[in-house]
Length: 546
Image (cartoon, rainbow, N blue to C red; front, side, top):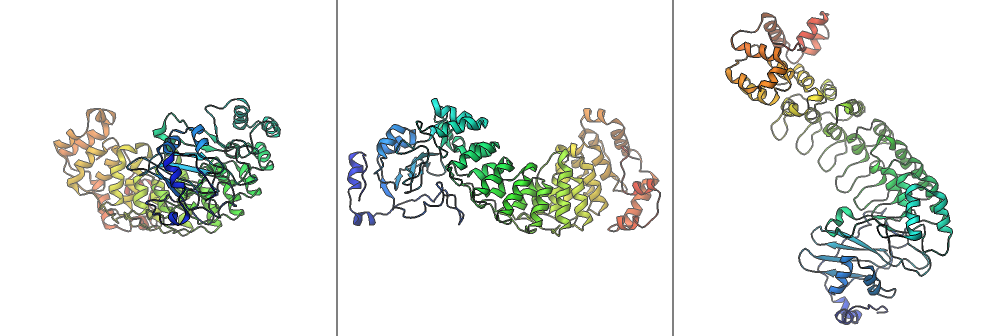
């Protein structure tokens, strides 16, 4: 076969079989390529390693498995010599180790069956190309937890952006360090957590993700592989995630692939999730990144991601480059749905309003439903964003449409009131009622009081939408004493309705609102009413019932 394994006798006998016998083997399982998601796949050593793969051999040698599983580099070096076969499948029963590798791919992977832990091992690079060192020296990754000497100095220099030290180390022919060195930052003591703990970094990844432009340029000029992705992500993806604009510009100038797909299924454009990454988006689009490319699992476009993170400038830029307004992701959400669905803090409400306004004014469908038949209005009400809710209502959103659970937008805001007090949910309730939302059945108001008593203005808006509601002693028991003490005037006025009718002024308001139902806002905008009367008809808050 032209290659040998210094394995145990069982494996040696296996490897002595001729090619005719090998062709008859049936492999029970084969791991899919980790770095080849699309035509812009992430080749770990660039783009010259995609040809001439050997068919994997099957190996059940426990010594090999143990060496790989425990990360015993000494034993791995012993087993995997330069002349050893690269293509192997190691398979065991149950939730134990499985391992596969491919010729010319410098990273072999050890993987637990059924989605278990992952660890990696560096393999031999192509002839004439160095991955972690120079010449014929050892090519294993540098474990940062155990590194010393020049390797430790190199690591610290990369972390701090010390260009002078990096240049000095790379110029020293006595050491075994190169621009394509691989740093292993995983903790081998916590093998059960490899899936979350495992990381592979190169000098290019470190400097790009930390914004060290001078060091990055030095490494690129020294021949660092710009698309090398030992940990499943390129340096460009790291720079985009960190919003390192100058590094993104430099990497693209040196030929970084703007369409490279990470092992998680993200392209660089999908990783621009912070306000500071707007220039990164601009650079990627100018260098040929597809504005409508999708993530592999969520099926999100860059517009989905920008809308979900409330990034107005990103949304505007993506729309200018032709982003699809009505593209739906795996959950059936459009970018407008995604923006409305994203929970956010009160201080971010204005940002999300601006994003939604931009999408709506650009032609986004205000009644687009996701797989659960949640409309943008349902989602905005779940997040208690009154600005967005009023925007959608003003553009004609159906105020009474139901989702699969049978809930309307009013149901959603009432369910969210107790934990969205800082968002002022009463503003959403009032807007929905003024736009003709079907009111809660009066018999359910006691239940609403039990859930929403911490926001008395929600109760006020609901009570003022009825001519009369029967208040009983149960209502008094439904409100905790501490809440009554916090809002004494309102709750005293509410409980007193058990003994007295509503005022004539309130009854007149209800009569007029009933008469103008469905066209209240349109008619009032055409009437020159005193501002106080106008506010009263639209359920202005007075913190008391009469």
